[in-house]
Image 1 (cartoon, rainbow, N blue to C red):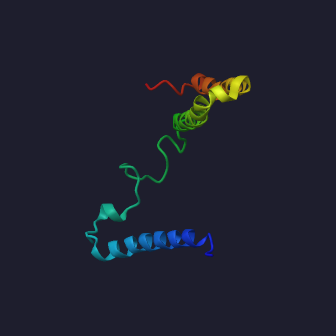
Image 2: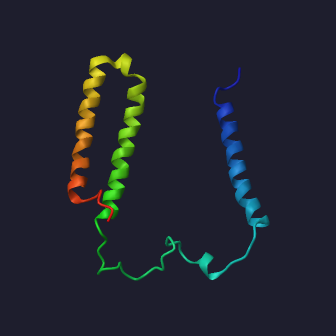
Image 3: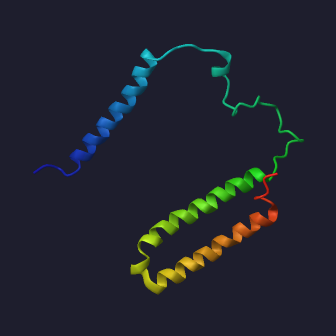
Amino acid sequence: MTNPYVPILILMAVAAVLALGGVIVSAFIGPKRYNRAKLEAYECGIMPTPHAVGGGRLPIKYYLVAMTFIVFDVEVVFLYPWAVASQRLGTFGLVTMLTFLALITVPFIYEWRRGGFDWV
């Protein structure tokens, strides 16, 4: 009788060989055309400056956009499984999801009041 972990170990070994093999092979056969732009740090196409524009402070809109993404991403992650199993969850599931949606509304209103949805 074989050990049940042998297939998992074989799969891990194959994955490691493929990953390392890809890195090693690309180092040998990949193009080696270096220029100034490739050797610099990636800065999203904006020339890096020693300090942020405007005296070192970033606008709050950057953080509000990130918060919007996180809030709605978490909301969708919880709403999809609930929608699939809503019949089996019954009243308890409905009350739980309504509570969750009420709690999600708090950061939504906060961001709205801070001007996170004004794209002007």
